[in-house]
Amino acid sequence: MNDDAVALLACPHCGSDLEADDPDSGSAALLCDRGHTFDVARQGYVSLLSGSGGKIVGDSTEMVAARAEFLDRGHYDPLMDAVADAVGDRRRVLDVGVGTGHYLARVLDAGVPDAVGVGLDVSKAAARRAARSHPRASAVVADVWQSIPVRSGVIDAALSVFSPRNAEELARVLAPAGVLVVLTPTERHLVELVDDLGLVRVDENKTQRLGDTLGGRFERVRRVPITYSTTLTRDEIVDVVSMGPSARHIPPADLRARVDEMPPAREVTVSVTLGVYARAAV
Ligand SMILES: C[S@@+](CC[C@H](N)C(=O)[O-])C[C@H]1O[C@@H](n2cnc3c(N)ncnc32)[C@H](O)[C@@H]1O
Ligand SMILES: [Zn+2]
Image (cartoon, rainbow, N blue to C red; front, top):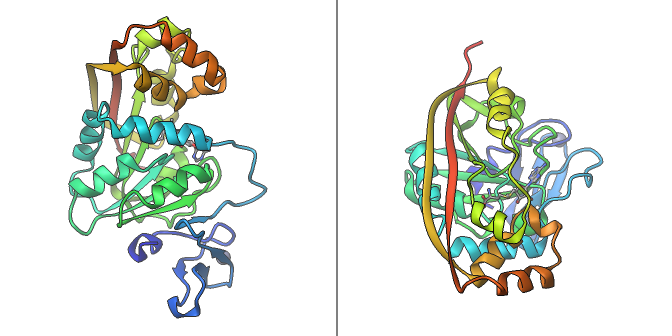
């Protein structure tokens, strides 16, 4: 794990700072002042789940693999660039619901050379991928609806890209001048696939509710609608559906059969809103 990223983490049991165990000890672990220790998995991530855990199910191995395949194809590159642009030269980056780490890696590549990233995800499969997404990124298994295992006031930019966000905890971990960058789909996002394949619809009130949820803790400083068309192959359609909420409702064989009825190339709409928020003055 990257030492500068580890320096941003806090013990999920007592809130003390965490640091890497003596590298000569032969075992990779993080420990806090009070002696709580957390093994770093062979794949390079650490689990900092607090409490009982296990109630929230993150993305499965198959969903994460489909997401990695799809994001590698470049159809969402404009979204990654927009997120990187919003982060700019901010140095300490937190990505909640990091998934494969594609967005975090893009932000670190585009940012200042000493930028560091922490990616949180409740899914081990996601943390495994995110751990190898970038040399300056560290991946942590954590449930963002619990307290986030990150020190207070140390984050310059927090990202929530198609992911859940916990306004209270995000406000706590952000530095006073820090920003929260949120990317959410609009009801027109991939609407062609929703129609052709009978997928789960995006809740039309989501944008409104998002405003409400963050309202007390944050002020929106920028709202950028991003809409464009891109053409997907059948395999890409299978991947983009398999990485999203519909994957839980359509068995893979059914999805494949439905996609095989479609033309070999389908133009779809990408439609999201990028919101940049600052901590509200208290
Ligand atoms: C739709 S994916 C987005 C992943 C990534 N940001 C991207 O856009 O490629 C949502 C991610 O949030 C994770 N997730 C869902 N609930 C979570 C929670 N309570 N705590 C942490 N991560 C969570 C999922 O495992 C999944 O990786
Ligand atoms: Zn501790």
